[in-house]
Length: 317
Image 1 (cartoon, rainbow, N blue to C red):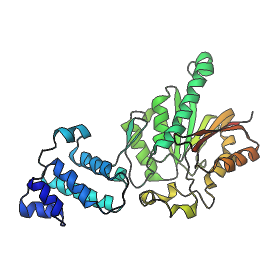
Image 2 (image 1 turned 45 degrees about the vertical axis):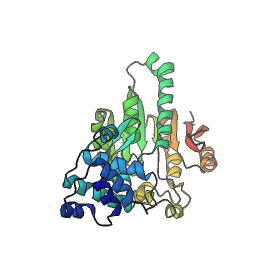
Image 3 (image 1 turned 30 degrees about the horizontal axis):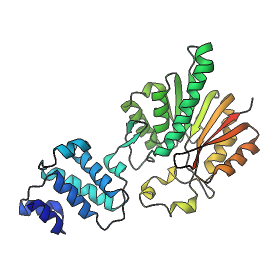
Image 4 (image 1 turned 45 degrees about the horizontal axis):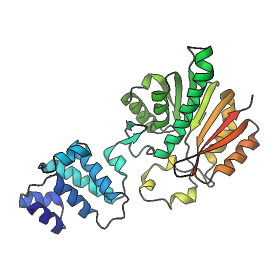
């Protein structure tokens, strides 16, 4: 009870008072303190982020926090918790503080050099997986048992798309590219972490510039697609993510134009192009695809919120 009263009334830094008053703080105390520390801050999902931060600092899961809620915490871990709270106060995404984001039931290292993988992108990954399962059932495994489905992932970032495809598509061979050297390093780390590094070739490349192969079955991309003027209106946490991974130019279509106009050179006949898109970009991209005269049959898949999310089209024979 003393710890609870102390936490509710202090306005000072927690560790300072911990040393001066010799207050013994436990897990429950820290959760209460975290809520008070961020009380006046406009942070979405505040209780969840405080809990995730404490899980990270203590190397516990949520169940262990509950079971051990009266466990006293040493001052060094309290200090780390405080530092994390200050970062949350300054709108640093919790994923950059914990250096982790779950995606497709896997854990990915992330920091300020890469975009944080989002659940909506799982729709893109699942679309490719479903298509590959259809290929396997109807063509490749029946006619060429040793064949590999060749996939090119453009703007790979953390490697979330390429690594997920490598994990869930057994007979695939993936090339993943990014213009950022640091992003490529992080993607390689994540591939090793998730045990698929032997199936992916990571290449530093500005879009197609360093790609030599020209017979991919699939090209997939979640490129930067936010309009330049819109970025400054996004929530503060999103603005902490790398600008190079967000900015799609004045109309948000700069990268799509390059991909749509160039992909046919790198796809085999009847190869597929999969693109994640913004909620309001479907009609413009359909026009770009139809006017390219190199792709047919554009279709669109919506996300769980009912927003247009993935465009799929086929290269002309």
